[in-house]
Amino acid sequence: MDPGFDRSVFTRPTLEVARRLIGARLVREAAGHERREGRIVEVEAYIGEEDRASHARPGRTARNAVMYGPPGVAYVYLVYGMHDCLNVVTEPAGRPAAILIRGLEPIVGLAEMRRARLVRELSRRRLDETGRARVVARIARLDDARLAAGPGAVAAAFDIDRRATGTDLCDPDSDLRLEPPSIGDRSPVVRTTPRIGIAFAGSPWTTVPWRFVDVSSALHADPEA
DNA sequence: GCAAAGATTTGCT
DNA sequence: GCAAATCTTTGCC
Image (spheres, rainbow, N blue to C red):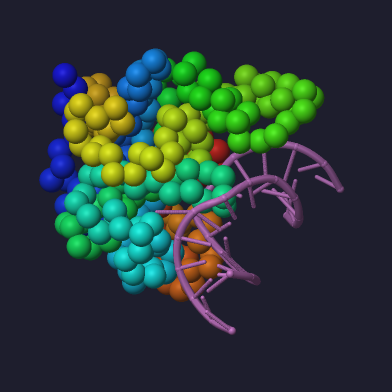
């Protein structure tokens, strides 16, 4: 049996948890699918109702309720009407906070990830034969390292959607879960930056360095990372 | 009840 | 480098 992720970690301050998640593994074992495993290389923290970039900013609602619950649980939302995004709830119950998983380095089940990306892309859009062929070609060409680059791509590659909200990511029996880094994994080189796509939030939320990146990963080999 | 905007990705200008 | 695709959630009338 796999070890599972120590739940007590998630009650720690969210910024500390975010740093510790870099290098951890996300594991997917869905019935009828090849096992998928990725190394977390990019995350963002969203902390409290005071964080104007967080989904908790309006206070407790039907959508964000799970952020107020126990830590170590999945919160998955739909953004821009099309992309699902996976978060891990943090902080003790009652205080709404979560960490958005923005990027994975694919480790196991790359063919399954590529297939999942293709299936989701084809089902999401109405395409004629030419458009369909174009999508098939694009997904086939996609670099292995980019199969789970970006929060929408993480969810697509791992077959995650809003139904996964509430999943206990610390349970070793969960078909979607977190695991600590494997023995022999390289140590991540963590750099912080401001968060992405939250210009609407205003000061100081647009500039707080709450994005955590492993700059030694292939995903972030580019200077832009 | 309706209007507006969003924790993104892709493709084309 | 910009805009489209797409639909849920929230805020206001």
